[in-house]
Length: 69
Image (cartoon, rainbow, N blue to C red; front, side, top):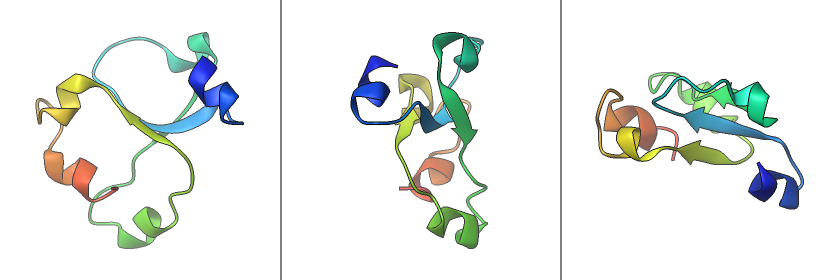
């Protein structure tokens, strides 16, 4: 949260494996768009964050992350 605020925002596109409630930490978490929704991907504007589990392709397809990169 501190990093986001230091960069002028409290929102980010989040891919997260866990059960923490992002608003509890002051984060306005936005969902990544579906990888087949090119228009939504093109409209992404802001920071994207992901935890290690999805970045290793566990529980979340790496194609889903690549589509939004």
